[in-house]
Each structure stands twice: as C-alpha cells, then as structure tokens.
Image (cartoon, rainbow, N blue to C red; front, side):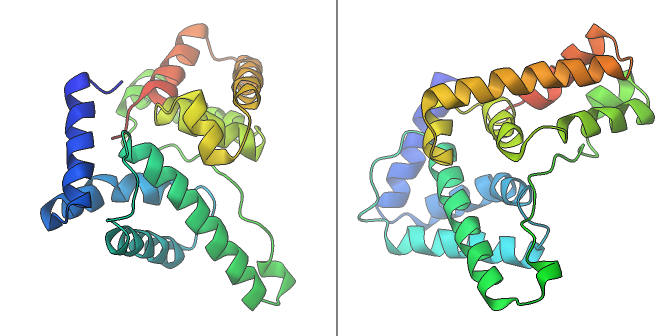
Length: 208
C-alpha cells in the first residue's frame, strides 16, 4: 500500500505537471512507463504498438495538461487511459488487417516474471509453470481484475472505472477467480504455503 507521504508526493507531482513542469512530466513518464507497458502487454504482443500508445498517451496528457482534472492517483488515471488507448489501437489495427489469422483478439495473459525470486526459491520450475497455467485458466476479465486489484493495489471502485464495470461485479470476479485458483493449484499438488507465496507475490506486490 502507498504511504500517506507517497500519496501526497504523487498528488504534488501531478499538480506540478499540470502547471507546466517538464521535470514532473519526465518523472511521470519514467515512473509509469514500465507499469503501462506491462499492463498493455497483457492484451497484445505487439511491442511497437504498445510503445506508440504510451508515447501518444503522454503527448496528449502534455498537450491537455491545463484542462486535465485533479488526480489523486496517477497510477489509476494512467491505467484507465492506457486501457482505452490500447483498445482503440487494437480496434483500428483490426480494421486495417484483412487476414483472419491476425484478427483474433489478443488475450490477457499472465507471464511469471524472471525476477520472481521469492517464488523461485520456494518451488520448482515445474510448479511455477503449474501456477502460470492456473492463472491462465481464468477468464480474461478475471485475470485483469486480479492483476489490477492485487498486483497494482487498485481499489474496487478504481477497477470498476478502469474496466467499465459495476463495483459489485468486481467483487464477484475477484471472489470467483481466487476460488478457481485455489482449486486448480490444489489439483497440481501444491501446498497451502505455496498458495500463500503466490498471493504474496502476485496479489500484494505494489509495482509502483
């Protein structure tokens, strides 16, 4: 969770950006680029498209900084804007591509990060693969809500705004997803300790 001091500093950073600080704008870009790239990469493997979307997003932010509303959580605001941007870009891409093989919608995929030292010290490579397979048995929306809620610490209200859902729907998605994960992980013979380690890494880590 973000400390009160960090929350205040992020609000101040956004305020400085709105008032034309190029340094604040640069800090925002460098701070959130990896987060936005990681999120968008769950929807498409097109690296150039993702980078173009991020760059276009920040260009629009700078050009419209005077009219941008007050923001208490830059992470939430930027994730919501990134989702809208990547979906629009993918829709436009599909209009330009006529080969049906390339028209299939990219799926929201979890990939176990190479730096997941916490998990790698506790379980084998084969068990890690079981974990990823368990995550990818979830529906796309279940995976996305888990990613936003536990990997990025967004509130249910923020997730509902990002994904254009009712708050109750977010609660239901998380509940069903966690139930399925527990069931599938137990099926492959992983103990409760490992399940807790997975939750600790995937669901409670604050990336920014």
